[in-house]
Amino acid sequence: MIKDNVRDAINIQMNREFFSEFLYLAMAGYFESVNLKGFSRWMQVQAQEEHAHGMKFYGYLVDQGARISIDAIEAPQAEWANPLAAFEHALGHEQRVTGLIHDLMELAMSEMDHATAGFLQWFVSEQIEEEANATEIVFKMKLASAEKGAVLLYLLDHELGKRGKT
Ligand SMILES: [Fe+2]
Ligand SMILES: [Fe+2]
Image (cartoon, rainbow, N blue to C red; front, side, top):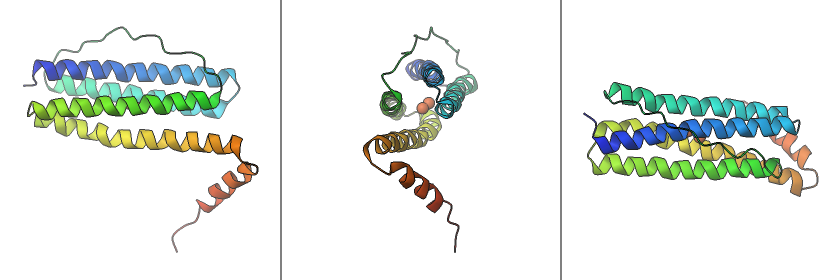
């Protein structure tokens, strides 16, 4: 049986994942408003991923026989100064989520809750990817505005990335 404090902490994180879904949907809407359809598409897929994360926590609580507790989700920010600011926000958000997942893991470990620690390991790995993806995009956006010839550099990088095994 899962302990009450671990159950409550997982419920809170489940709701936070749904907030992440809302935040990325808000960013998708912002990108639509500045006619960046590709950026909006990326954010819509990201929102779907966050929904799936929330449902993973949901499924875990159900498997543990715990009661699901759905909270009100606060309205996310709706406007950003520019596209880079939105992606920097996304990166900062993922860094905060990583810290929260680590806090959860520490709670599970301190409670000797091996099942929850094992379950959370997927999220620990997922956060590495989440931060890496956002970092790469922020870096490329900064490059695009800072360097002359950045577009050619980007296209060349894309071309080199297609190289197969020898
Ligand atoms: Fe997530
Ligand atoms: Fe995320």
